[in-house]
Image 1 (cartoon, rainbow, N blue to C red):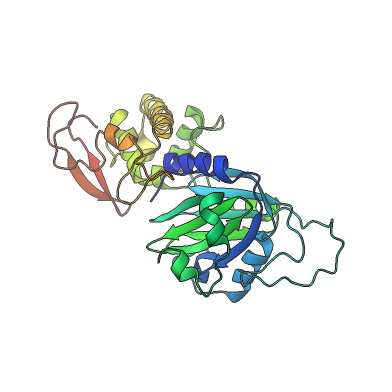
Image 2 (tube, rainbow, N blue to C red):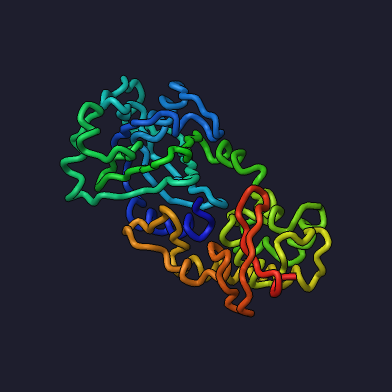
Length: 319
């Protein structure tokens, strides 16, 4: 699952390509992706219709990130915009009337990704209808946003991701009520981290993976930060000393910043929008290296299941 550096890298790439463009039409080939965010979703025709109606005709003003989520900031939707079938709804309002700006929140989950076709490559695709979309797009291209100067495609092999439309910023903010602070923000301080850890009794690895504590951290960067700070992932979070917490705080900030600069970590299916691999995987000290030699002491790295995830660490270097 893409973590903060991968999602932030994608955000920057998307912003460069689609900011200021208008969503002319949406082809929704897999409605379940817009029917909610639970793992056991059912298709909701109502939510599908709200998604297409709410976003069609809107301009993409900005793309933000919250934890592992992308937030498309929308504005300028006009009543009477096209539906997914291309048919216009009756417009009984004045031509200059605009719908309130909404938000589209995207979580990529295991295999979600975006691709973009420029205008010259998109002209033919823009003429595609649902009837011939299967010929114009790949089998895993489930949502097609036909824009004013190109085509944005949401691809998801495993179909675990979700895209949710909210009609206003206030409604979208409720989506993140249980999300913790951003680790690269000013709100994330050693004091905040110490206070958050003292309130929890689980292992430090399981606590760091909790999105209500720190937003955006996942298996990769938790393992790397714990190794860099010399803390064993099974260590009880509430028993860490202030010096250990300060070291962990620095490690989280430094590692995430470096990973963003290098385009994140390409493991499994993750790729940049250009198709290239994120280069931070080349810097991994422990993640994915169970059984190999520790780059610090030379002893064999161990692995264990913590919070349902395979965790790699060095028993000698991490106490």
